[in-house]
Image 1 (tube, helix red, strand yellow):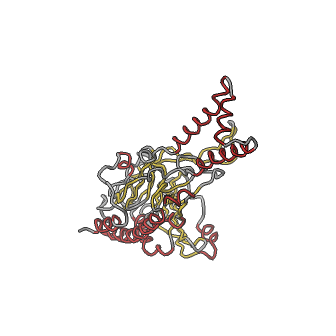
Image 2: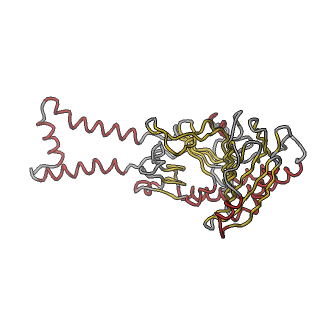
Amino acid sequence: MSAVSRQTRELHEIFPPCDRASVPSDVEDECSRGEHIVWIGGPFRWGLFSATPFVLIPGGAFAYLAYLASASDSSPWQYLGMMVSTQTGTDALILPGLAAAYLVILGLALRDPRPRWTYIATDRRLMTFFKGRKLREADVSRLDRLEVVQGIDGKFRNIGDVVWARVGSSDSSSGRGPDQGRHGFRGMRDPLVWKQRLLEWGEAVRRHAARDAKAFEDRSRASAASTSPGDGMRLMNNRRYGISLTLPEHWVGRIGLQERAPFRIFGIEMPFRQTIQRSSEPLHKPPQSWNFITVAGRSGMKFNVNINQGPPVAAFETSRNKVGKSLIDADGDWRCGPLSGYRVDYIYLDRLHCRFGMLAGDGFHMLVNITLPPDQAGDLLPAVDAVFDSIRTDQG
């Protein structure tokens, strides 16, 4: 059994059995080449919405009715019948209309969520799909915030949301969206068990990422003189700037074109600029023209590269001095194929190993921003170095 299949089997054993044979085409299109789906499922029946408000509404109405009936020596049901019988004309439709509206809202809230939601765990990330469209995704860096959210009725039924982020309605990214600001797997039976499963998944993915990073480093060294990528490697050509670089095939991210443009309000140009994204595609579907790559690494690493026209925008001494005592390492003569510049490695708030780099080419510069957990730096940085060592001119 190969190393890849052993890793995938280890992840399969974390999750309950599922039907991986019936993967929707939208999910297949989103997955990178070589990305394995280890679990696919959805919310438990009636799990997405809390029934508590719908129980309290008629309960409160009945309590108020009982209060009114106490003054007339009638039972609440007799008082309700008296109220209905005394109405005339169209007023007689008020109470039945309110009851019908309540039942409609209750039916919409409690409709079966399973046909609309799909949850995916792969050997690289977690994803939620809504009506066939990817709504959210998360890598293992989000799992330190994983929590279980249950209402009163959810605790009775042992159903809850296992979320990696909760966004309030006042937040800039807001609670808009069908997941109502709860990013994660919603409406899961045995939510505490699912939280533990996802934590175990994250630990396994971290271990696999370290092994894959070492394998990529070894392959890069072996194929340094080759113009074509080997197994487990993805060649990214940039015709516009005449360069190429090689990424690990197991990395998941986006690639596309973005530009800085004036920010306008009511047609008036403001003195600052905004970034406008013209295109954004999965790494396995690169557009013909691109100037940014952003990767969410399997072990919590963030890898971002932006290419802009013009000379470098920050000097080595300025960048090095800016990080102060958090400096780990710096290279003022960093050469990567046809590009040259510098890099500065530092620790941010004792939580992240960061790298800021600036590489210059013929009429353009490349900005490099990388963050990763310090305890993973020894495993992952060699693979990162191999990515930049792979930079070549477009001719080879």
